[in-house]
Length: 267
Image 1 (tube, rainbow, N blue to C red):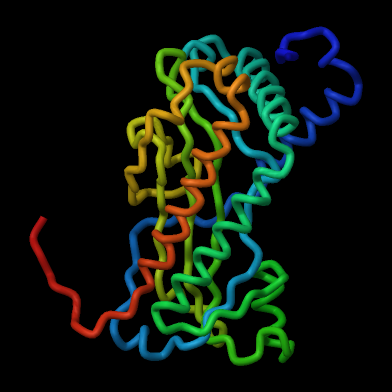
Image 2 (cartoon, helix red, strand yellow):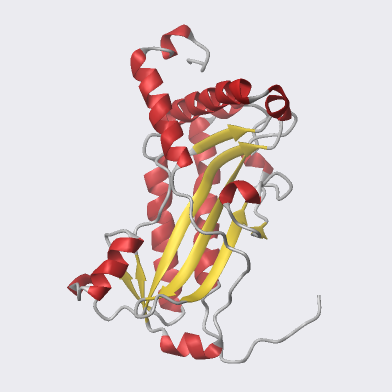
């Protein structure tokens, strides 16, 4: 077993992989989400066909542990921390090279199945969200008849530890927006934290102001440190697959058509 600090890891090829991964992690910022928007009855009646574009996600499963000490020391220490994180992501990916795609496929399948059970027609679109919007304006046959697009942006997905004293646990932070194709109006929107300890999630880093926490903690998928996580990398895949299934149910379930109106309750 190789560890991130082994000398052989710091070859030219490894440095290039580290740099490429860090660049990907810094890309993909979007507008701030300030509040949860729920579909009303009239909107639900108008949406019959939902298009599901490609899920936006980083190309690596995230392996991360926060350490307040680095924040105190300064920028140079943070850079070292980022390099160490990226090395861990690469090691975990080498152990489970197909895992991210498996989770995405499982998530898409779960969303489509649940939406269809709820009465929607779902079109599987092999294109990005922006390509789908552009295609609708250009009368692209692939987007013909689609009333709204379900845009899913996964901000973080993987194993996360809030501090050196907390275990690595599986989870996902994602944004889901249902947007009408004709006028680009947001019909429904929510931010989900599936699995992570809500006290550890920094919403500011995701450029969102809120998150709906879905508690799915299972200590069989908690790992006290990175060495333990890596030594059980194959087993740990089950935790991420479970999170992907719950995420799919959460997103699709929020778009459930209701026969009765929503009840207003005091909090």
